[in-house]
Image (cartoon, rainbow, N blue to C red):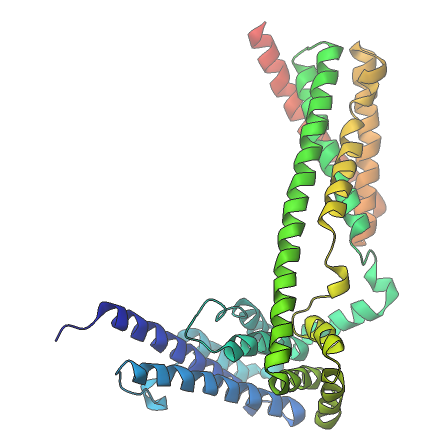
Length: 375
């Protein structure tokens, strides 16, 4: 009897899902074996969730008329065997960053799988948040968020402004120097500089608008789905929230009491779940128009600087003025970047000056060669 190709393809897909869940369960049990106390209990709960998922795929295989797979039918994948070996050799704490990255990568694994239960997709995202809460890297993240002297530009506005000015400055300086190298008149250089300013500023603004708008729509969809889950599965959502708090070191009873209290208010529950499970702040999704306008003007501010001398003069005086203004601005922008990154003020300024000067020199040389060949 000829086997249905579609059924065979589905069976292979279900076996892959089953094997991946069995790998996950084995890994979490290995982590539990090298852990103690609350952390061990959390890993065991995660292992049980993976086993429930594996059970689902085993049932799906049976529905297709396939033999029911059992633990003896599974052979761990090479990557899972390696991580388990590392866990047994160096301990759970050493491999948690590896597991965290893997869980984050797989967080949306079941979102586009129609045969998966909705709760399974939710579980995968929760696992990523729980493991992140247990990971040593989270400890430093918590310190950085909690101590003002580590936060710096928390909103990112200053960073975006400085880098926008830098983009406009370097790109338009290179354009102006390239045209000047071709021995064009001051009027042509001014026209080219203003055209480059407008083209770059509109491009930056439009690009940032599309980027932030798309990200915002994605975040809003995630929050909407979370609201539906809270309404449809309040008990499961409360358990997930308690698990996340336990991963942060809160005792089980206290974590469950906190989760129960939060879930009593649907709006508060949605806000908390968005922050804790999805890592989103509903109040700070960002304004696409605000970012677009900010990007437009920050780029324009940087791009206008090499053009300014040509607005008031021409010839060698304007050229020298453009170079001098650009050099000062490049150093200032580099120094600003150094302040943001915590590096040396002088070193950041000097590095940016060299980069900008290199770009300007190359384009000037190319402009000169083209200008000579044309003439």
